[in-house]
Image 1 (spheres, helix red, strand yellow):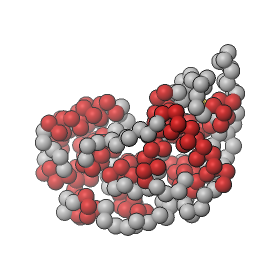
Image 2: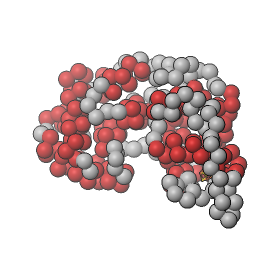
Image 3: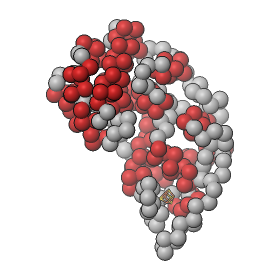
Length: 252
Ligand code: SF4
């Protein structure tokens, strides 16, 4: 397994300040919420299906769609490859955008079945994570976040997942990429500062998700009592009167 970064240069070198700050944020989140034990799906098939179905969908709706797949006896990619797209779309309907998502699942199934005999072990056998990621990105419907979900959760490889919650929390804390603040820039920030360790990347992502739900909500974040308040640019400007300052976050 490669420990090389996807886009971000040397991941084996901790960037001092950013590494220390991201470690402190992780430590505080873990102390506040405990290990999340978050594993989105009962099998690698469900993890990958879930990564596609969760696009623009709440997870509770994805769980319904996964339950429908289970009830229909669809438990692997060869089964998806054999069925027609219209039937699949009906099964995954609760996830929304079901016709498009059925096409995406069919595209992934075709890739796995036609290139790797339907065997996920064969798909993930490469020790070139960056090459595998590039291959996933070449499949219809697989963007960076979905590719990293697949790499991290289904393949157990250290590719940090960036989502809107991560970006919102980090911007408020005051950590933004030094370069372009696109997906690659955000991922590069984490990859350069946090040593490549899939269980840690998994836990960190889950903790950020939990923190978004519990405290750092889209509107009216609950800064009073927040576990990150002392290390957060917005939190340090918070007052019980509801006066929240929004300083421009420094690039790191
Ligand atoms: S202090 Fe406020 S803005 Fe900062 S992480 Fe906590 S809830 Fe979010």
